Length: 73
Image 1 (cartoon, rainbow, N blue to C red):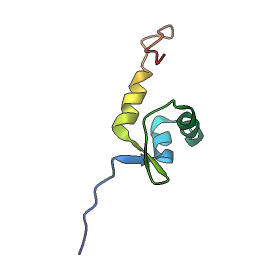
Image 2 (spheres, helix red, strand yellow):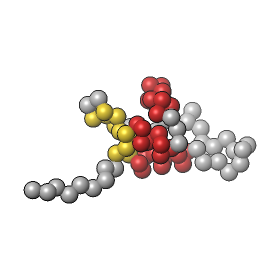
Image 3 (cartoon, one colour):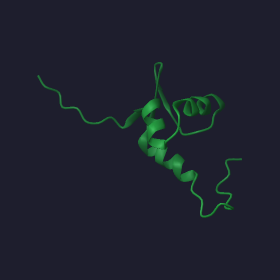
Image 4 (tube, rainbow, N blue to C red):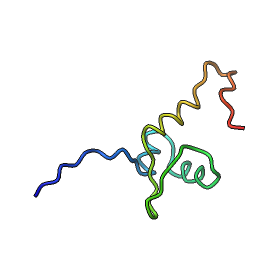
């Protein structure tokens, strides 16, 4: 019996870091302090949805260097 697999919508910490062009340690630190993109835990495994990484990246959008953007505070 052959099972067809489709690409998972979930990215590992390493894959998510590559996607955002960050170091995995940055995502790990953000998880500890409550910053960064939303993530899921399946047992001990941490994963990120690509759509949520895109939404997080959109929060960093700026029109100019003096644009303060959207504050989380």
